[in-house]
Length: 393
Image (cartoon, rainbow, N blue to C red; front, side, top):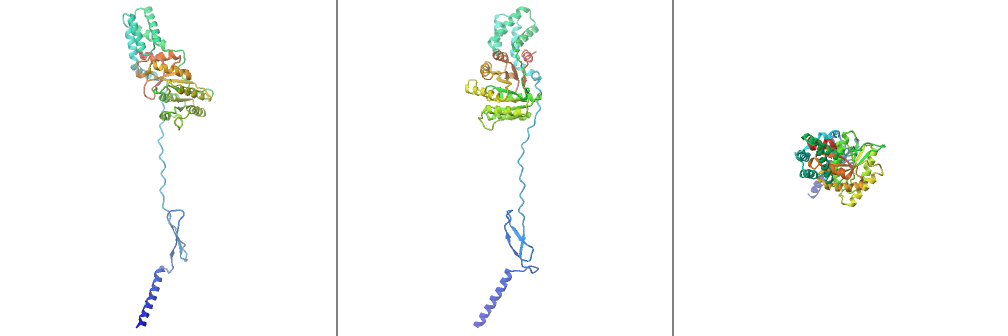
């Protein structure tokens, strides 16, 4: 009995051994034994499965790596639309109505006083007061009153037209100046003209640089802008925006507080390399009472002159500041030899007499006037148009 049981156990063990081998080594449909050997794909994140295709049982099947989506190109910023500004010629005539609205109070008051039947001392005192209030200045006002009194005595009877023509002649005599009002913005000796814009904070200096660039481009000239106001990043940004609108390159420093003279020098160098017609340099607004800042402005001019000549030094004055503007003008003239005046905000004040006062004080002409906030509201100053606008003629 025991032997029988042992025999059954041995047979069972043998049967299990044979079946295990079959399970571990199954044969394929064609009787070829297959085995799989997975290998690491070094060129992709997915493993490769080998299948040699031979009867050795070492077959390799390559699974391609997952396809990566193409990288998206960075968005291209929109290119600014380059504008074609109108030429500067005739701008003041086109803006004459706007000038007349702001200045007619001054002219109307003078016409009313001079049209009185009897011009006594009190009336002449009123005329002088109107002139002084209009920022003509005390000395020029007294000179005008003296001239007018003489003309009234000589001519005798006066019609309204006579009064207007008499006043027009006198105002033109005060506004006119022997100095040329033309801007020197033409290339010379193979180099661009250089315009240095100076003035205190708040006069619209940077805006004037941009508007002047527009006017020159409208006249067919090529312009390079120099952002030498390195103390305000916003000033450089503003100037660059003006330049982009008319296709003018702006030279600036990426470092706030950089040396203004260095930026101005670089701007002139770029202008020379590009054979530009004119380089306009914007400087930081300086208080005329700060000696160190004024000295720095003088340095900017000296450094530029190592590369080329400075053809224009334009002092930007706010027409609404009146006699305070004259004090500013005197100090700037001592430092950088001002060649011309730009009067901004002339459309917003009835004190057009500042034109007479500032020319008399400095002996240099008003060359440009700002007659509005629009991009093309900067105009070459024309005395006849100015006086006629004051008188409403």
